[in-house]
Image 1 (cartoon, rainbow, N blue to C red):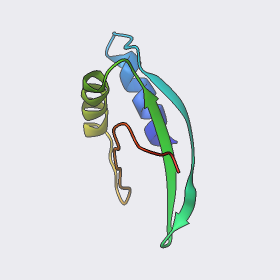
Image 2 (image 1 turned 90 degrees about the horizontal axis):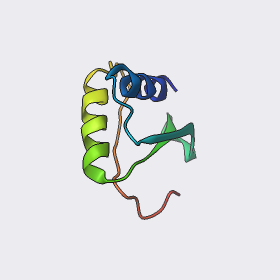
Image 3 (image 1 turned 90 degrees about the vertical axis):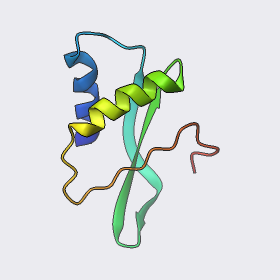
Length: 79
């Protein structure tokens, strides 16, 4: 949830409103896997290059600590 709020803040702090939609974060279908909790964020935008530019700048400012992030562009399935 913290990453979702940071992504939303990053979009508005640049002064530009990009046509990127951040859907509410939610639990992944396999919420607890090997003792680790998983959440899913879904971003929608007009093209992959804009999404990657937005994500790369937003994720560089995030302090992960013991958190890991994985990015899947155009996933085959959301399960």
